Length: 257
Image 1 (cartoon, rainbow, N blue to C red):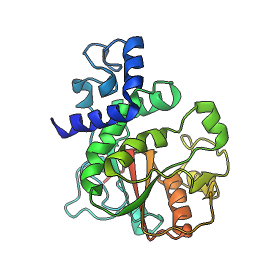
Image 2 (cartoon, rainbow, N blue to C red):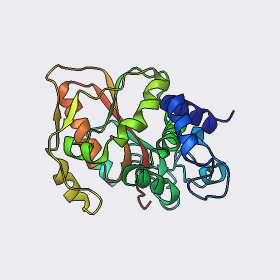
Image 3 (cartoon, rainbow, N blue to C red):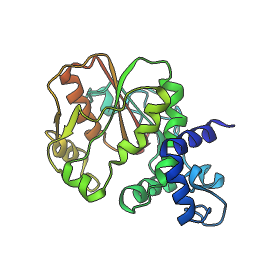
Image 4 (tube, rainbow, N blue to C red):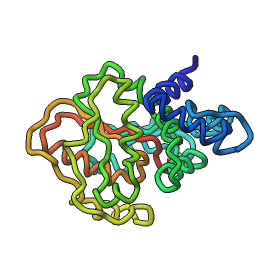
């Protein structure tokens, strides 16, 4: 079994056999993207051919914030301009795929289209990329970027939590949802500039409890664009006492080399 198939199997198991059975009864076993090839609940209704169309990042990115280069890789790739300016609270951020094509389509359909089966496919991409990097590391907890209570009621679920849960289970690390909370129902980041995104989330997060933490922590989100949201969460964890904070996301926006 290939790594991608193993990851998909883990994510399908995390959803539970009952959920898979119900999906199988309601939806035909056909790819939800191309509608032409066979794909079932265990693969997130994404066929092998469509999975191969996703642009995986690998090492084609900034070594500190994970922004993928859109052009040729520099001869000696170093930190991008954002990282050289020391703007981020995290120690390192990475992502599995480039935020384009069917990858970002699946994320949008999961978040806004009420198509929860894509969580299995997206979680598998995250596992495929993150497990080799994280296995054996002493991580105290995995923190999915929280939603505000208003947005959570509207959507019915936190996509970051759904994507992070299979990774936490695969690593045997606690999924921690009671350390950081969203204080403000901020406007959507999608149409904002880089600096507007930073201002929009500057005071959006705070600690849920005053107890101190220690060690290494991991923040998980669906998409990293400027990194403003995840950076704000990392800042809270730093303030609580975390010695090291890293980030993994499913998708990352591109940066010109």
